[in-house]
Length: 80
Image (tube, rainbow, N blue to C red; front, side, top):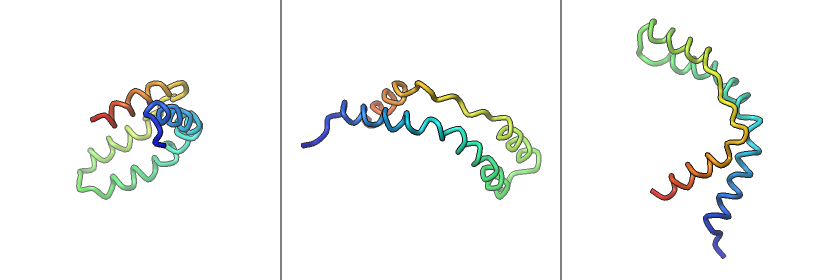
């Protein structure tokens, strides 16, 4: 039997909650790669330096307790 939308949302919220502890560390670990890949683009040095400074200053938001927000956005996205 096919699962209901509410069952899928409940499972998704559980998976989201499990991912929260690794989201920020993975984002921070990807920063060098972001800068390296951006450096390959044909932008000037000032633009590249501004991007790198922005990446260095960026702080990944605390996603703890955002399961409900995820569920609302996910439901909206699949309903299009």
